[in-house]
Image 1: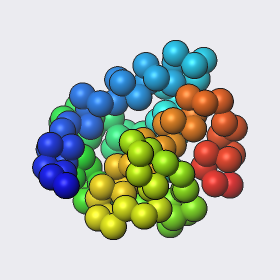
Image 2: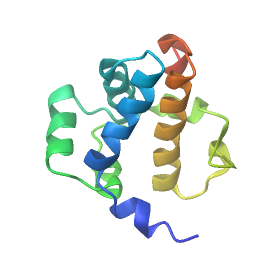
Image 3: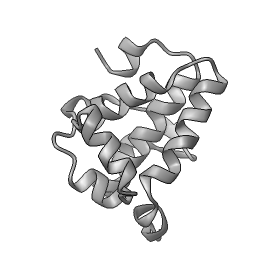
Image 4: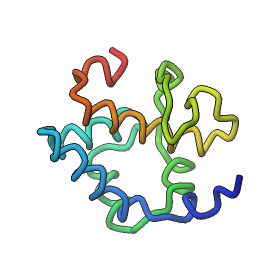
Length: 116
């Protein structure tokens, strides 16, 4: 599968879609930010800087300060593929983020989303 397109896509261009998906279901931008910072280790300020720079997904995850080790607990299907079976690490991290945003939009409690 050619992952080049998603790798070069700007996180800043997709981010408003994450916010819209969450808000449509009564969730907040702050919850989306909490998920992203939990997953990547970016501070709020670092996240905002990455969004402003229009960093692509590949760089965003490659430069993440501390990818959360608990992300391996994320299970389920996104885009018809089980996230735990994705072999390419960057693609898996992108799909982990997609899965967490889906869980938020489905009304799951933050403690469960963040695998607390």
